[in-house]
Image (cartoon, rainbow, N blue to C red):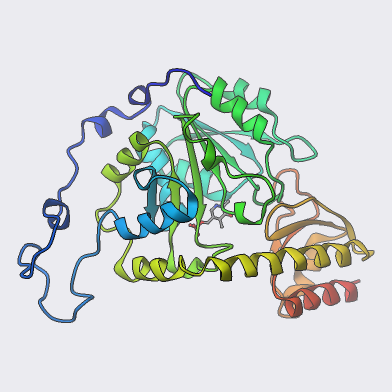
Length: 347
Ligand SMILES: *Cc1c(COP(=O)(O)O)cnc(C)c1O
């Protein structure tokens, strides 16, 4: 539980003062039969109409699935939009900074550089656990946010909830917890702690367990105050009509998603067990995600060999603390057999 917390102190002054764009779909809510307010074409329904800027029907459905009130949900063009908004809302270019664990997801750093925000990396321990003291030591008076990824990409492990809570309590800025792979983890989501921590922002996505990377839909869960700031800064129609319709339909198929997830988890165990048998594999790291980081005897050689046989994995061997490592996504059982057999042939 965090005692008092004043969010306005963290927000960029220009964003606090911003009078947001008022689009036609925002100005009038309710029922009407003649829509002549937005210079749309009267032809080609339903695509002729601008989509709901606040995606209220999708949020109502998501609210039931996720157990988070609608006003605490933000929807974006992928999690990437949510990441970018953290910088645009809170970080003054050329002045503020964020602290992040390393290695982690590359977009946090790219977005920081695009927004001219300093990115202060704190190495994970050798076993890929979070070094909370080092994270707090990296905080300066200009640190607006801490980026955490749990389960982490590319290491695969989830962060201990008690460690995340220590940061939420001891750091008086935004703590972002990216749970893109949360559906594959046995650890509980941090979104159930939103009421205890007004500085918590949890990100999830339709791109992984929900099988919908192509539609570009990311979610952020946070206090209403933070969500209102995100809504103020985002493009008015950031989630298009096709994606909103798709999401409404897809959210009805929770059982399908759960079935895919349990198949992937079973395949993950099988893939890891098989990889552990291979002389080309030094070790596999514990994973709570739909991929496994594998330390090999020769990452570049195996990567090239797999590529030449039509199998693409991610070469992470030049990433800090990942020497010799490939990141392998869990696929179908045939795909997993293909990668296992190909590595077996190498060398
Ligand atoms: C894949 C991934 C995402 C998903 O990003 P989208 O823009 O929603 O597709 C987010 N965070 C991490 C760490 C990821 O690996």
